[in-house]
Image: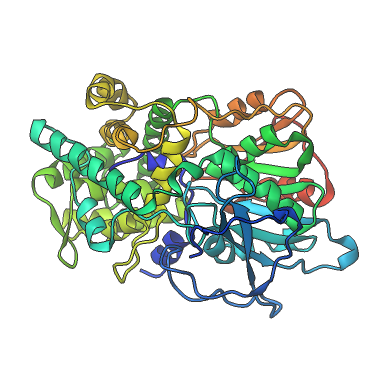
Length: 515
C-alpha cells in the first residue's frame, strides 16, 4: 500500500470483514469556558455510518432487542489549550446486559489502525464480546481524525482510485520519481483539506481524550481492551495516567521500542511468516493444494504472478486493473486472519487465470473502499496519526540502502514495506518521537496477549511491551496460533484468561501459553 507504513499496526476493520464475508462532527470554532469533564452525554439510537466511517446501515439491534446507542463527546481541539476550540468525538455503546448490581463500569475498546472507526467496528464484532457485556457497558469511539470525529480529509474518491493504482515498488528512476511525486501530492492534499486537525491527532492526544471519556462515563478507572494499534494507545494512556488504569488487556501487541523503520522491517518478517504458514497449510492437506504442489512452489508461483503483474496488470474490478501493488496489498489483507486464507486461495486461482477480482476486493478492503466506490477515511487518518507520532523522516536514498535487508526479511513484502517508509517525508507536521513512551510504574496489571503467528504485530512485540510497561505491570500470555490477534480466534484458553481478568479480576500467571 503506497504512502505511509499503514500495515504497521492495522487491525482488521469492520468494513473489511463485512466486505469480504459478503463477496462529521468537524472542528468547532467556538471557545468554551465550561469544564468538559462535567458534560453530560446525550445517548440516542445510532445513525447509519458516515462515508468517512465506511458507510453502510445503522447497526442492527442487539440479541436481546436493545439498540446500540451513540453520543458525541466534546473535547478540546488542542489539549494545550483546554479552554479553546473543541471537536466532537463519536461514541457508541451497548449497555451491560446483566444486573446493575454486578456492573463494573464501561469497557472501552480501540480496534487499531490507526484510523479504524470504533463506532462501526464494535457492532460488527459485538457478539464476540457478549460475555464481557454481562458486567460492562461496551464502549468504542472514533478517535480524533477518524470517521465522524473531525475526520482528516485528503484525496477524493476518484483521486484515491488513481492513487492506489500507482506502482508502490519502483524499479527505475521514472517509477521512483512518480511514487515520490504522488506521495507529495497526497500529503499536500491532507494539509490543504485538514490543516487545523493535523497537528492534533497524535496518540498522546487520543490518550487524553480517553481519560476525558473515562470521567464523563462516570468511571474512577479506565477499563480497556486495546487491539493492534490500540495496544500502543493503551500503553501511552498508561504512561500518562498510570493511577487511572483499571483492568486492561492488550491483544496483537505493537512493539513500543521500535522506530517506524524497525516496525516496517519486523512486519516484513511477520507477513512472510504468515505467508509461509499459509503455503505450508495449503500443501499439507489431504486434497491437492490448488495453488502449488509444495510450500515453496506456492510462494514461487505468487512471486511470478507479482512479477508478471508489474509488467502486465490483469482485469480487476470495473476499469481498474489488478496491479502488482494491488495484488500484494490483497495478499497482505488475507493474511490478517486464517479465516481469510480461503479467499487468498480463490484469489490466486483466479489471478492465475487472468481474473483479478478477488485479490482486488481484498485490496479494496485494506484501503477502505466500499463496493460503491466510496472510501472511508482510514487511509487519510492512518498516515496522519502515524506521521504525527513518528519523528523519523526517510528519503528514497535511505530506502534504497535498506532494501537488501528488507528483501532478506521477505522476498515478497520487503520492497513493498521498505518503500512505504517515504510516506511521511513531506508531511506538514513534525513527528513527536522515535517511538512511544509506555512506561507505567504504579499502574494496575495489564494483560498483554501475543500471537506467535501474527503478521501485522509480530509476537516479539508482546514481551517488549511487557518490559517497557515496567516491573509488576505487564503480564504476558502467549497464544500459539495464526492471524492478527488472539481473543477473536475463539481460542477457549485465551478467552477464559481474558474474561477471567476483565470480569473477575483474576490475573493469569505470567508466561501462560495457550494453543
